Length: 433
Image (cartoon, rainbow, N blue to C red; front, side, top):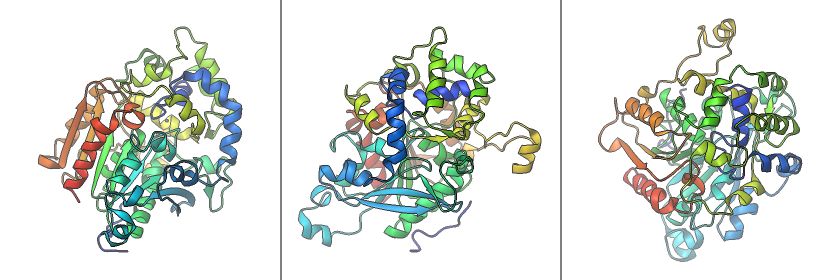
């Protein structure tokens, strides 16, 4: 591996809130038509997800039809999960240079790694046109684009020894993405490009990055990170449905999930829980996008139909509980096993260790972009995160963009994201080439 990439390897909400997440929460923003549509699509999507891994992959499905070069890659984590990666090495016509000869002669392109949120996969970055979607925009601007897919999703559903249908395969929370998946992916990109990549995360893609950075992971392997709708604190979720569900952490629905290790929004078990949730007085299951993410500013009317063609994707129930704990407790910690003895066995202490955002190295460049209408990455919670980061970051190492008109989904599938967000992300990256 190039010395440029070498470094020290340092290194989920009661069932009720889980139901929320199933329908739209943290990083399921594109579900614009609500839980009823999800339920209606359940049987079809359940069979699609089960077989999608055997197809040609995201390159053939989404990227190649637009005329972009695309490569499928695989990386195996330390705990045996086989993750799919898509690479768009350059744009159409060479990505900012003229002609094929210039492609050959041009210097190595700067890699950028994109990380999605929960209940979706890397396809969520590719649902718009080349003029609107971040991967294509980056490629056309001369970047070498890599798209990650979390364990358990369509193109990351294999393991060296575990059966994806087994409970053991799904025995992980997002802590394991922090410790195993992200370092493996970053090392892979670094070794294949001989360069440190920039990082872009959305929603839970920011959460796992911030948690990793706070423990000193990957900061020596990345050039910078752009965090869109950053999530670290979740105590200011104020939407009526969110408040009800957060208070229902110990509610009656918990028993319905105790036997489910895989949280698949399209499965009969989860869709039944969604139905139960929708029967509660005052619950609006027809406009969950606005109810949970805030009123988005610039979504195309066809966004929901396009989304439902490819998403949602499964994750572990443990991950959903972990996210719920963050809402309930108001602090960002490792997974809480609840029983002190279990926490002691795992962590050596009765309570799960906290992720300290103030511990993120002050020299590591960060770009944060958040919206004033975002009900998940609430401005009050982002303010808490910024207070932590500003204890050390100063000058050009911390760039903050506040867009009062935007909500959660605008940052990924909004038609205005290029002009309002992505151009500034690219300018930030160019400062740290």
